[in-house]
Length: 225
Image (cartoon, rainbow, N blue to C red; front, side, top):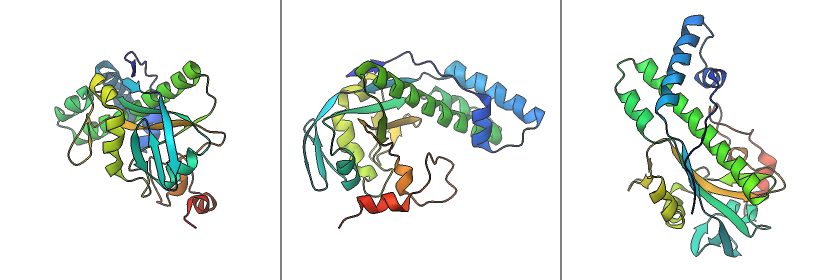
């Protein structure tokens, strides 16, 4: 297990405003700037990952480090791959604890969005670390629950593969398969020549978290024959 315990977040107010879809009025910008400073003062971004190797691949199944995963999309993405990087990233629970003390619902919502931006920045930090440390070029990632093909129930298998990592950064999985603290993400990074995003296979419109446009042609590639 590899631990990153000193992640530095570069949080831009503009990124938060874009996610909030707020008008750029001076008073609103000032409030967001204030809340960004609050967030940066309390969060503790950490990441942990494993270096794992694929045991075998067969139809819709991939076994990694002795743990069996069932996903056709994951199996196709890992077809040319032997080494992967399962991970967990968190910013801790201090920000959500801080938000719970605020009486202003808009401020609480702003901190919620700021937390989302922070966890995204921490995840990006991990990605750069993996590229530099393991001399890999382009990386893509998948997470249980991001697609119907790889349901959230597979979090159990991922956490069994990441048991040391989850202990190290104190991220647990509830019976309903939610991560605690809430501002935590998990998944598997893998080397790829062509960037893949689960968003490319999801037709849901107006998703604020969308990272790439829906690609119906790419979806056909992963369809069962």
